[in-house]
Image 1: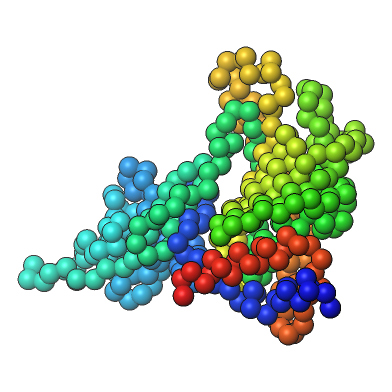
Image 2: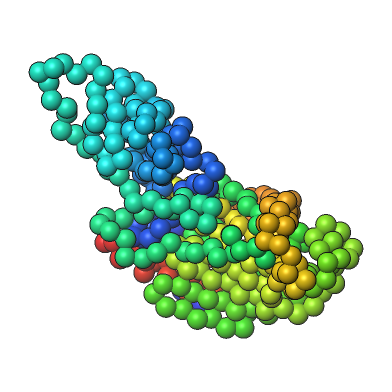
Length: 350
């Protein structure tokens, strides 16, 4: 067995926790309304809701009275009301009202956890760590930029988050996707890493070149595609992932690990319109209309990728559960760096 293969032992990687002192994505902005939404981030049940002013709040998803889920309740003004007995809690997690409280009784001195939360770039970012955040959420500058068209797919896989990250960092698995892939013949050129990120630089052959108005038709008609060389860069910026293919395409994967065998993530694909300089001279209102009208243009492409990747990832998880001692024979150096980063980040909370 080579030294590289020996370095990739899956036994402990597949049971790693997460570093809680980072921002994770728990929902899309449009998913959170005045009706509470229950989500889970690494074993922590959380209730998200908007108050009467539209502000997002996040509380531990349990009523301190009988421990039932607050996400079954409703928002009354700026308070979250439990469906069971009508207890209300403010956004700090403190009991604010009890409907049957007697005049001679005081409000219960109980409190549940509240979480720092931000609404940014179309998503809800939550910080599950202790204390105040010392880092910022990963930015998606293309989300509001008029020169980029977005599509969003949701990944739900019954597997540890490490399998998803490795899948995303390993560009050799394009063999799986055949006609769905945007690139072919990837070759790993270089790897850069530190305690926060791993950047793997590949050289690939791209099927798309978005440089003329008519060339957008490549997205819909495979027969029009022609291979040409493009740099393919993938980055694990803990705890999320980002990729760029040439100048035309950018993809993000924003993670929400649920537990050791379940992961949720949001995959966001951006197609660039930067090559169309005449478009940039048109009124902003029209450019916004174009951007909004074309939202989801790559949906079929994304959904096809996700279905195939999730199938493989879940098979990997099941194989591990059936025989945790069995080793992988890994040849991609980028995955060694990725696993090292996962371990280093998880150990920071010990």
